[in-house]
Length: 321
Image (tube, rainbow, N blue to C red; front, side):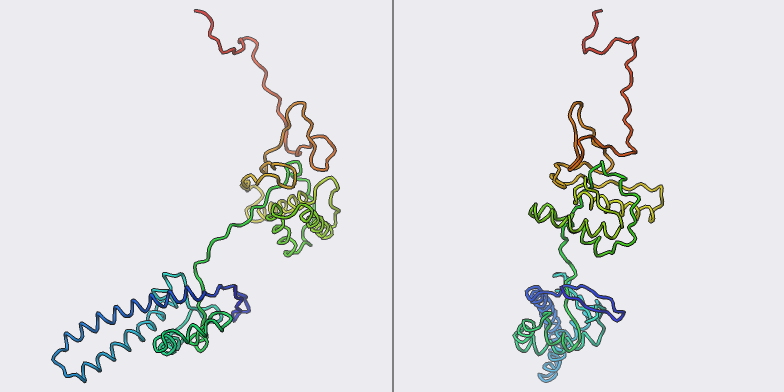
């Protein structure tokens, strides 16, 4: 990853192209240019067979300069740094500040490329790319350009497990205005990777983050709530507030998919918005709780509808005719 700074002082994170992908793109461009050169030269020689040898030699040199030097320059200028080989390999030539190249950049790269690629069979270009920190050849150094990757593999973003349902709405009154963005980012990164950490290390990290978060909100962290669950509940409260600000108070927020097992060290966590109702006769205690079954305030258990007395209960057997 290479951090570039634009003229507006905006940091850009660009991935410089590796030497193998650049070499493959150059080989593809050279193959296309040589095929075009051979086809055009053959046609010109046949069409100018009546000319003398000096004229044919001059035309051959002109075709060489036009197709093997001027062709790549024109293609990179018109496509803003994407030749056929670079397009196939997912690469692009950009300026040092991340902007698209212009004719002068492509001209300098093309002219120096004749020396370091065509005349030396690419040896100078390979050595310069290996020495450069960002893999730039001499043409890129003098032109002020950089070859970057346009197609970046998509990485799986970590899923943040929702908090236990019995914490729904418990932290609605917290003041989250003093919590910095860096702390929110650290909390989110921890929640997405806590299943990959050692349990003791993960617990200590959760306690430290919960202490920092409680110090920013001005309210102590509850002792009956595990630190990871507390972080997840406060993070969900912040996301809910942002959603209400963006879409209005009446906007419905889609619930995330169910998390992986063993979330927050308490088995399978239920999805957001689905209350956990324990079976009859089975006590339910939240992690670090008091032994009773807390339910969110907005959850009301409806009694089962009565069975009509004038109808016989369904037994699964049909009465005799």
